[in-house]
Image (tube, rainbow, N blue to C red; front, side, top):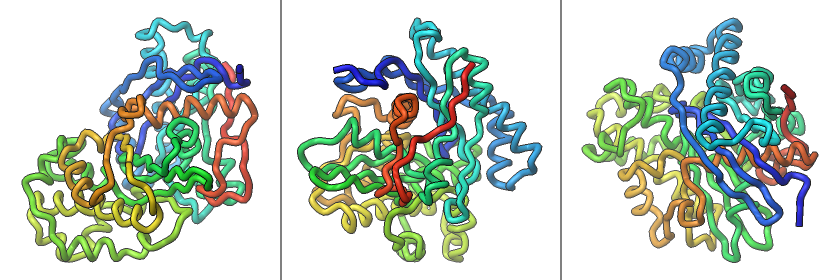
Length: 366
């Protein structure tokens, strides 16, 4: 059976780790979603430096809009490169769904800022572009995040309770429960703290393969002090970002300054694993399988620590379900663009806390 959202869509996103622009070309049909092709394009180094400075220091208005233009151009270039590689004409794509780059997330104050000029993407690709997905949910009283759970629900739901775990800069869980509303929320820091420490120690963009953490020993006292932060006890709906979880937050604990860098890296990896295990225990009774996606699936040390903490719950990649773990979020925003064109709500109020379901995104035509 055909659907109003059927067709080709292209999704674009750069997460809080800012390791590149992920682009995913999908085909929607009445029977499901197929990944046609995907790619990841690193940011130009000057833009990456500007983005880090903008996020770390707040930046001025001119810096914000300069990055907005440059990020839009980087997103458009990533879209064009993927279409060229896939041999797909821009006119064959119904819409681009661009999440953009989050530079500030303050849902308690009613706003969340994603840059990457959607009008510029539309003009430079010749494809209608849906962007600014979070604003409508925020206006309806929601957190504006997480938004991927409605896509997880559409693609990953099965006959048994299961969880989808995104290991991006921030970890978030989607609990798919047959016969009950989907529950989803941000859990806490995932790669964001480990990446920041790696940049500080070596200038590297991340702790590749978890090598730093693997050489260290987690400090139990620091771990317990970090887990005692009141944020972890807040019930869903909730969302967060590097505005809250950053290295200065860790170093509020004087013990952190006394640790060797490898031991601090191990403690941060253990913090991610322990917070996820605790959240599953508290919110996900009956879940016996966790399907992971995001950059963290490529960190064997993090995955090892997660398996140790999950204690009998199976941990697998979304690849087991036929979906590339590197492109779940890019696919999500491609899919959400279809929901916007079909004038269907794209949020789950039970997840974000919004007063009602709303159509997401602003549409820019070329």
